[in-house]
Amino acid sequence: MKYTKRSIIWFLTMTLVLTAVPSVKSQAAAKPKTMAHAYYMIDAESGDKILSSHANKKIYPASTVKLLTALTVLDYADTNQKIKYTKKLRKKIPADASELNLKTGRVYTVEQYLNMLLIVSDAGSALALAEGTAGSVSKFVEMMNEKAQELGMKHSHFDNPVGLDRGSGYNGTYTTAADFIKVSKAAMEEPVIKKIVAKHKYKVQPVGVKKSFVIKNTNAFYGTYKKLVKNKKYKIIGSKTGTTRAAGHCLVATAVDEDGNTVICAFYGNGGYERLYKDIRKLLDYAFAQY
Image (cartoon, rainbow, N blue to C red):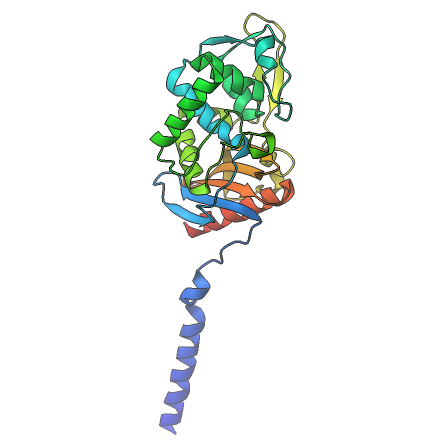
């Protein structure tokens, strides 16, 4: 009888232990399912990969390229430098590029152009910065590719500072998620860029002109889809959007949690905008859960 009691007690004890301690398999969070051509997510401080998908697949970065444009500009130009927005320059804007329709003849500083470039993805600002920095767009593109090589991007090339690709006849712009995360990290380490991409809106005051205008960030986490990250233990502190037919819907998003852990995700989506933001939210949820 004693043996039977001991057996029962041992069985009940082991059952409680096995129930209380989850298995290694149950502790590991499932990799989120997304609709993406590719993505790459890192710890911003260490640069260590958290998660990726099709990291080395050839993709088209769309207007996320403007992060590289901004990094290149800041290597050569002073933020207080003034550049005139001319009729000749405006005529160079490709018909399928996004633009603010800036008034010609107005003068803006490099800092103002960078805000318009990164907050609303203005193509006119990209061209103004290219010509104002290098003297010509073609020379500036050479500088962009030199910057890409400096960052260790071995599978990338760029032929315009706007982010247009093969769908618009720009066949020399392409990258990979593994390559472009290097641009994303470098951009968030540049104080000027980090400050700009965190803004929800910005007031533009042309040099010598009393009338100003306000631009709003194209990142829908700050507007349409802000509920997706509401009440999360992290917040979005920077972004750059982009879209072309070949690229799909793209977003480089940076988020930080309550403990200061920072995650950068370069995402190149194969669905609509709503799916893009839901997928990135799932990836960020996954990343911060791993901490």
